[in-house]
Amino acid sequence: MKVLLTFGTRPEAIKMAPVIRELIRRKINFKVCVTAQHREMLDQVLDFFSIQPDFDLNLMVPDQNLNSLSAQIFKEFAPVLNMEKPDLVIVQGDTTTAFCVAMAAFNAGVKVAHIEAGLRTYNLTSPYPEEGNRQLLSRIANFHFAPTAHAQQNLLKEGVTKEDVYVTGNTSIDALEYAKSILKSGYRNSEINDLEKRVDPGLNLILVTAHRRENFQHGLLELCKSLNYLGNRKDVQILFPVHPNPKVQKIIFENIDSRANIVLLKPLNFPALMWLMEKSKFIISDSGGVQEEAPSFNKIVIVTREVTERIEGLEKGFSILVGTSASRIIEESEQILNGSIPDPSGPNPYGGGNAAARITDVLLRSFQKV
Image (cartoon, rainbow, N blue to C red; front, side):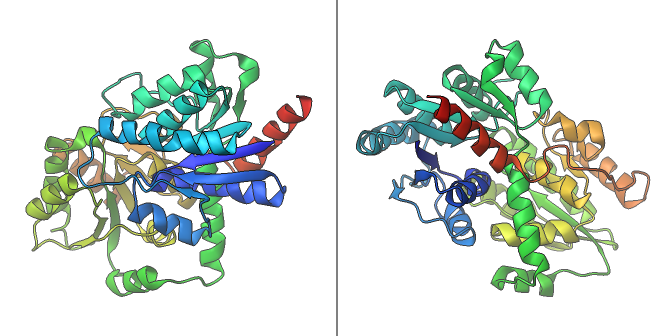
């Protein structure tokens, strides 16, 4: 079995890293190709997990639109496929990289394995363009690695053959457990050292992240209103790693009240974000990855989206879906701060840290049959 793993963004890299570690452990022949749809944020993850790409397409350019990015991925990935002639291409999630790479592999007659398959909102505008990417990807994938039973059911309802769908848990939890073990052993880096100086242990720490396209403009403005209000409470400190997208940064930097107790940070590397997540009282975020990771720290995520494909967190009390209304964000935040909503507990509904091993088991069995 000859495998080619391809990814382009920070979340993909985090969730692919455990699979790469497992392939190394099992001595399976593989190579790694990165599109670098994100550059700096991707490189942070590659460094932490000691991943050395065999092919780096380096496609990130400022203000790149989805069509030009897609065209570049098809153009630059095709020679890699032709050179390597893999038996299998593995993609993760719902990015432009994941869909375009899968489509290129399909066009070349190469089998596709999709990690984190079956997530759905059934609203093509939210998240955009991710919902379209993952629905289209499910039409051409050969192996569907669903993180949860709910994701599996989505695929089965859409007509995907039951024998091609495997419930594995999410590899994000594998990556998180690895990071937690490293932090527990005393690991520190410059970002964690800086955070230790900034965090006030006597205050309720609120971690905030925001990056969804559908939240640009109105959603981010409402988020800023809510943070300015909460940041003026005497018992609260807000730490907000701001996404590097210029459209996000412009709104955040222009609308956050400098008098409030809000610390705007550069994007954090993975272990620093995990360290900050553990220190937080709760989290305000539109990130799917954060919704998956927070239950491992028994933290609530106030989800600033109108819909979410990660309903397991809602069902278990780890997530609260509020949309982008400032009043709703403030209302739920104050209920947590005032103790009206207790800290959640229980196992992480997105996995137990063994997803990469399950995925590798399936692939080995399948290719041994061939």
